[in-house]
Amino acid sequence: MNQNFISIGRFYIASALKILAIICLSIQAVFAQSESKKIRYNWKEAPVYLSGSGQINRFKSELNGPYPIYAGYEAGLFVDYALMQQYPFRGGFEYQMRGFSLNDFSEGTTNSGKRYRKTITGKTEFSYLQLSSLFKLGGNMPEKKLRFVVGPSTGIRIWTRQKFTYVYEIPSDSIRIEGKDDSGNDALDVVEINAIAGVFYSPHTRIDVCLRGTYKLFGFSIAKENFISRTERNSMLSISLMYRFSTVGNLSFF
Image (cartoon, rainbow, N blue to C red; front, side, top):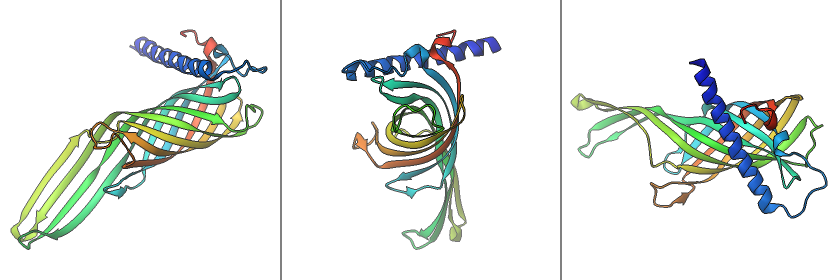
């Protein structure tokens, strides 16, 4: 069983790297005007990193305002490359889990003048596949331990789960109604476009620590009146540990 698990893992890593190769080489072919005198990387020499992140995020909607801060995590695979062999960046895939929680109490009066109380508690979790490109500011300076990065990311929502319970009470009539919602939500954005800014610190030649801030610019949804909208916002702060374990050419299964 362990061998099967390792084989599956190798297959997915190899597939991800091949996709990255196609993307990087396609971008270079489109934008390259002339060959640079100084070659930063060829694909076989590109460093490969495994990453793991802890993050806090805050979800905000037009209807309900900002929700409390929520803790999530990320795990991914990154490769260093250079656009047109002149503009170094770190690009890769991340599996990302984030969400928001709700603990809401309200009370009021029914149409017949009776007092009611309503309590809703629970959480919603999102699972995303993020494709990020982090461009290094100031060119390719590998000797520097501190580097600043900016870039875009595209997120595809692949899973959503809501777990809410609610209680509705009318004390004067001894009425108490309880229920729960344990489902997905197709009304949320399926694709999102984000802006990222961050700083890398390299305490070791194989290790990078990265502090990143992410802000959602807009999203795409098939279940809303407007296909492109900004009705959902998400801001996130993450700290990542990235370990350079190989180069593309030294991966035996690639």
